[in-house]
Length: 317
Image (cartoon, rainbow, N blue to C red; front, side, top):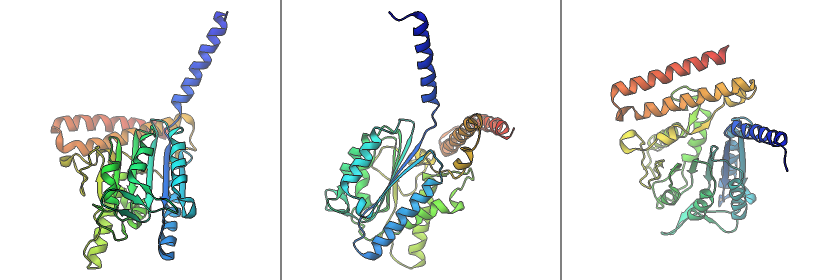
């Protein structure tokens, strides 16, 4: 029979363990898949974009877990193994981003990402992603014909961004180049909160893509789309009126300040995490402003700003 004293020790140990588990900060997982180029020029370009994205995401600090599959390593088997492994590793409070680079095809029924060996379909990717418990998910498909994958990948709590609006836009998109630029250009962070959100990156890359076709005096052969409300009815301009963009505005894609935060004492790290949460709430509130009564908006915004100021003061002590 277990004594009351021993039972007490076990309960205290269990309590401390649970406190440790729930105190763990949310992690960010990034999976970059760079498929076949078809020509040496595209092979080199796609591999470079994958390497550069890998570098940018590593700037998010030790809580960023980056897996890059490129060249011969980007097989369907490795894609399945990687995402299946994450299904058992990622927690519900974590965030997952999947970025697809390369050539895509659409046969009128299935979208496929061209890989060495067997291709992978949008349906197969969706099934793998559905097994990963992260409640915040982002898929950025920068390939040709990527629009055909959107309706299959769309799901509640998942942001889906595609370089094209349909499977009939088959030219190699330039959107991928500007998506990468969005992570490098300080101008992407339009609200100047030190974080690049998925929405900010989408707006930046779309604007740059449009400007490219205009400057080259070319007919646009790609039209980037986004959905983040679970609907397959994606839009080019997310806004409150079409109920698109709120989830993307609160998805932190790049947080260069995270590296600085990890060098702080645990108490300070908690305050920094609280500050980031408050900033995300302010972002969401601003996005909802048009659909709210003016007095209610001001009241909620004032309360959040006061709490943010108090938190910043504690950080600065």
